[in-house]
Image 1 (cartoon, helix red, strand yellow):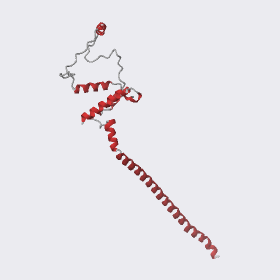
Image 2: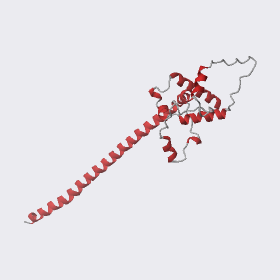
Image 3: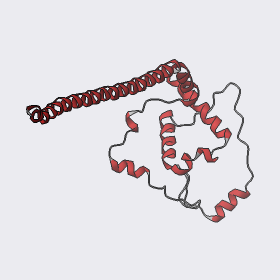
Image 4: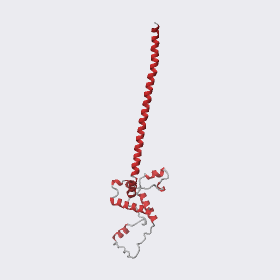
Length: 194
């Protein structure tokens, strides 16, 4: 009978020993799973780093080609201080559409403000006389404008240009001859800067 009374105590002792053992096995498994997840994260991070380094190596290997393209075709340069805008208002004003000018409103620079119809008709009916040919030993006549004035006029014309038309080069706004002329001018400017 004494053995019968200790039978319940035996089951209690068995449960007390088995429960912590099961808990320790589960916690050890969870710790191993956490280590495995951390290792997977480290592997993914290492792959990202390797991909970034490979991209950097390829870019540096192609740097000579990129510089050649920039020199020959793109002609990119760092922005000059004059290209930065002073405020958000100046930036917003760039997006405003240009004012539409009719041909009757455009007056060439240096022309008198009002022309009479009779004067225009008389000028159209008058015969055109050829300009005298320059003599072989003489120098060409100066245009009367300095390079700075010409640059200023070009800058003013570019400000007046319709930004939407200029931005749509891929839509065929400029002909191939115009693009070729622009490339030649860019090459001349690049050579002048050297």
